[in-house]
Image (cartoon, rainbow, N blue to C red; front, side):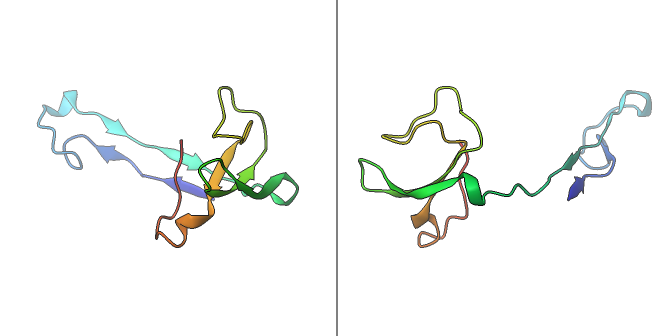
Length: 90
């Protein structure tokens, strides 16, 4: 999947008043690919604060650690569905 902002003009899209020769154009294109996670998922894991998580372990993260959870790439709190929170990144 690719996401493309298209060309965004500093005057037209952001309202920055500047002479034509001083305006800027910005474009951001990102590409995402699905990552098979079946063999990299651990859990459910319960933390010392009694929260339940699923861990995604695709590689060690320097300085990682949430209670007894170590070296996770991504941690998903299972309660986020009940709390109406889609996801959180750290």
